[in-house]
Length: 79
Image 1 (tube, helix red, strand yellow):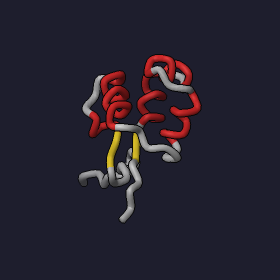
Image 2 (cartoon, rainbow, N blue to C red):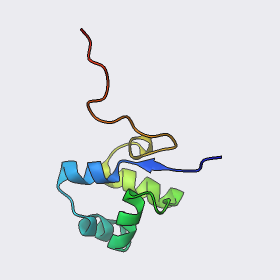
Image 3 (cartoon, one colour):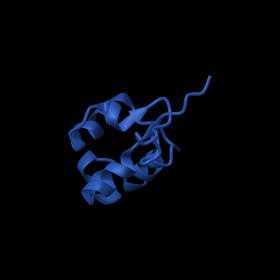
């Protein structure tokens, strides 16, 4: 069974102009933890996942998924 958790943390940070260090400070974690999360080298606890979603003011499902997120611009365009 594949237990990979995909996330959009890097995309959300980039959209808002937030550094890894700024996000880490807001969450009370080490900035390297944010990097590990973004690269999928570490899975967030439920508590941390909820705090990340709260920080970005989005539902947790927008940040985390058990299946890969579609690439932006990869959807077929209507004719």
